[in-house]
Image 1 (cartoon, rainbow, N blue to C red):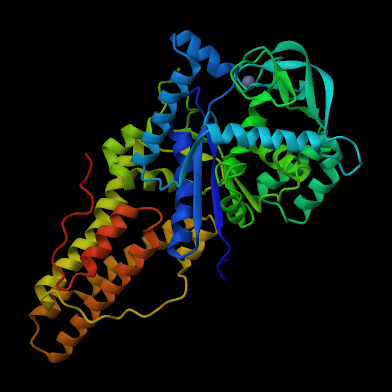
Image 2 (cartoon, helix red, strand yellow; image 1 turned 60 degrees about the vertical axis):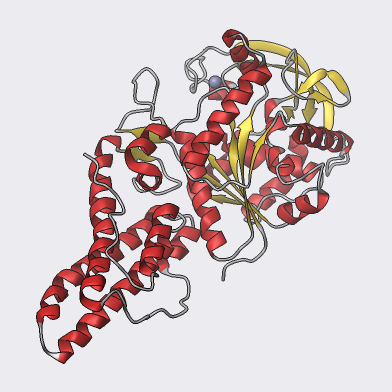
Length: 487
Ligand SMILES: [Zn+2]
């Protein structure tokens, strides 16, 4: 049975240093699908997304562009909001880490951390010296093990050697409790490959980490040491709390954070979310999220997406070509959510025409046309309250491709049923039995299309609303094409 406690769904907050791209669109659409699917089950849902706007890299980029960091992040945040709105993402809040309520909340969070005592009775925060290899691109110290030929594997740059006096979080004291949460699945990591990766961190060794930086001006100063600025991750992660009212509206905050919390992310930020974040929450005495879902990486037409290859996909271009629902469909169908895969952009046209313009679009237009022609636009209702369909269950279980495959099987089946039953022949027949058969067939097709439309609501919200409206009309008339073929 579907759970009824309020559900808080979050995407990562996207780094304002870069422009929105197909990766951030992918994560955000996925979260939106789950949000819409649960709202359809009448559950209270809050979808939180936003931008991570502090850090040296942002300050550097703004300086290069000759603008203040604030002016720079204002522009960037607008770009992300704009793309997500165009993708029809129904977020309840777009949080920005430069917003006043977030800054107040983070200071409160830091103060609680400073006052906390670990399970071993030691202060959770201590002063220490950090020597390490710092990657500007990652905005963090890298371990030797992470380097490939002495370089950051993500940015292909040689990290700088830095020595700093920082404040540290005594993460190691929380590891037994954290491991217990992970092995007992009270903190559930999905899919299982991601969970294995997280359990692997414990064998590799996990160390305390510094929660502050010297010489970083663009950020939130530590409340007890103004020479230090909160480390970008310690500034960013609490957005999941401040986004629903932490430090400002306790009642609202409690409602969402004491409900079910699900974090969505790409696998590259798994460690911050599954190790650092729960331990920080344990330290300040707040509940740990129930679920974290890490999706995989994808290539574009078999190649890594990169500026130099010129295959970086702008989601706005996809919307221009395939519309909002077409884009949502094409991004979610190629490979199972949670796994690595390939986006076959070169074959998007083929897929769009076959599945949307022909498959789904055709079924609606021929069905509504026949209902208009043969039944005067009226069919008997065969609706009955139904339990969750298989496709809906698959959606709620994060199996997006599975759900869409189930739905497209139903579409293919309905199209074949029409071809087999030949309603145009039945309409010409003078036998009363044929007239009855025709009326039943069309009623079943309308019912089936309504079920399909319902299952597609989280994925194709606009299309689904159009379908439902056409099929629920008092007098059904031939529906205009749902999708124009793309050439
Ligand atoms: Zn790096």
